[in-house]
Figure 1 (cartoon, one colour):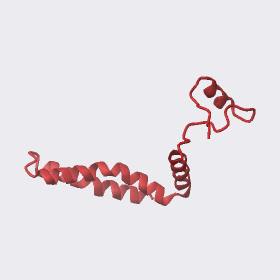
Figure 2 (cartoon, one colour):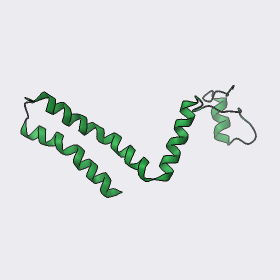
Figure 3 (cartoon, helix red, strand yellow):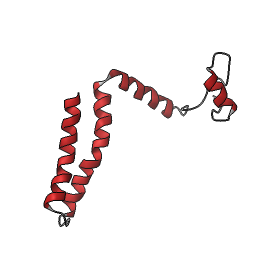
Figure 4 (tube, one colour):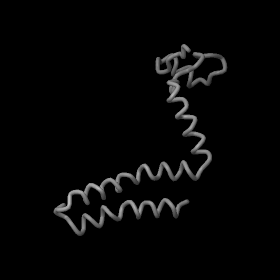
Length: 102
């Protein structure tokens, strides 16, 4: 896994570095844009690599996406109750958690 991350870093950073060294005046604008696109896509690549290689990351991202798509992210479904942890009760009293009405 570390090898894949290192390889993706090298592959995605090398074009931008090469263009910057060979063409410092940016005479070939399209080449500069393409290399910058690859350079910034490395941040997305790490996410995809971790998600593809680790079941815990996959499960966590799917759970998060399900909550976001259903519009329930960051809300308490039942309000504060006896089963809630003290942090949830304090956050509810501070107005940071809106009761779920659905």
